[in-house]
Amino acid sequence: MPTPTLSAHNLVRAYGPHTAVDHVSFELHRGEVLGFLGPNGAGKSTTMQMLTGNLAPTAGSIRICGVDLLEHPTTAKAHLGYLPETPPLYRDLTVDEFLALAARLHRVAKGEIAAAVARAKERCGLKKAGKKLIASLSKGYRQRVGIAQAIVHNPQVVILDEPTVGLDPLQIREIRSLIRELGGEHSVILSTHILPEVESTCDRVQIINDGKLVFQDTLSSLQQRMGSSSLEEVFVQLVVNEEAAP
Image (cartoon, rainbow, N blue to C red):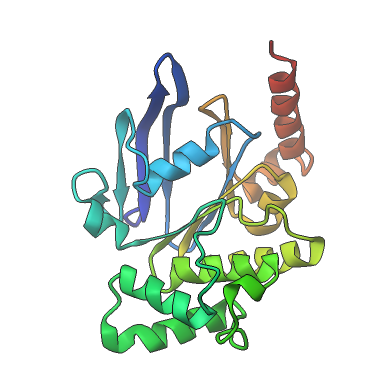
């Protein structure tokens, strides 16, 4: 097997007596879209923050393209692109200005910034939006800008945290299509609580519940072994159990 683009080993994040993420381990490979699925509060965003170096794990290790994230954070983060649940946009900048700023922050060489911005805009369907203020864009297009800033430096690993929350059905279809396209050149982790999103965009799914990974498999393997309704049954049962807990 080729070297994983991302590997997490026994990740733990505790807040006093509460363990938000409990010994989570997995790998991601180039060209793969991994769905990180779970109910709200299951530990998805906490895991995403640790994988991107925005939150230190209580225990465990993370390697990005073979580089230890905790020991060499700057080198490891150079291989990462991240879209948090709330996109980090400067609404008073134009799309071009913001993406150029993002490219500089990601240490794209000065002479390559214009080409990097143009490439990110083309991939995210923003070619005609470069001169527009971000504040004037629809929510769907602001999400596109958020994804563009995550890929402007052409990282090997792209992490998207709830990228379609608050979008209308047309915008959701457009963003899902964009995610599938990104999977052709990058390794992508998609964190979501929406089951159809995983089924329509991902190659492999992991379900986290109460901070623990409770399910891992490829979608094709799952469907062959258990039938197309099995993933839905697993996920619904987890949600029901969580809501029934005291």
